[in-house]
Length: 257
Image (tube, rainbow, N blue to C red):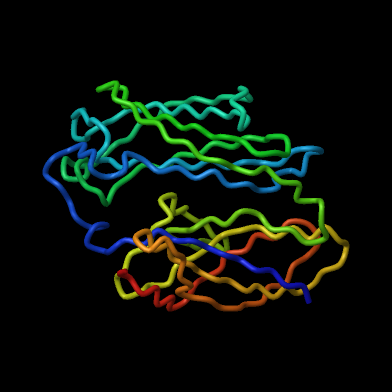
């Protein structure tokens, strides 16, 4: 049996913040958008692997215009990839159309739009720059992050980046996940949540793995990390790619400083 260790650092917020609505649209006191860049093996092309980029834009940030019975907003996303020294690698841009059923949705923090892009990149470290611009107001915001693109065939057993999941739906035996791009959880009753990741078995033998996971909380005021939850589970993996959805049960995250 092989052993894997997962370490997850969470940004934890109270449920009150997650559910509050505001009467003033496009309040820039909250984050204008979130994005994650996660590394997966992809099709295991020689010398490169896949980066999945997820962008979550709150409705509150967007300018909606009433069209018939609905409210419509349009915004543009530009993803730029460069080396850590600033050399251009690639860029991808697209537009998103968002349709809200009523005005209350357009100013609610409970509604957001999620989009994604997939890029195959050579092994190495990259800076990802994401810009979101509302096409009506022309107001834009930019965020940056670093992603390491790894060789998942290098060792007998390797693991992708971890994705936090907002919800898991099952229909006709097929499970669908919705990513939690903000990497936040609420304090309400310390509810269960999920992680998605892939394990790559680069041998020709099926095996069981023992997964040990640890959740740490960053205390910004004291500049320290605190382990708030840990656990162990086992998974059976076949040769090749194995997709795993791990449920973190009764996490008891212990909110507050």
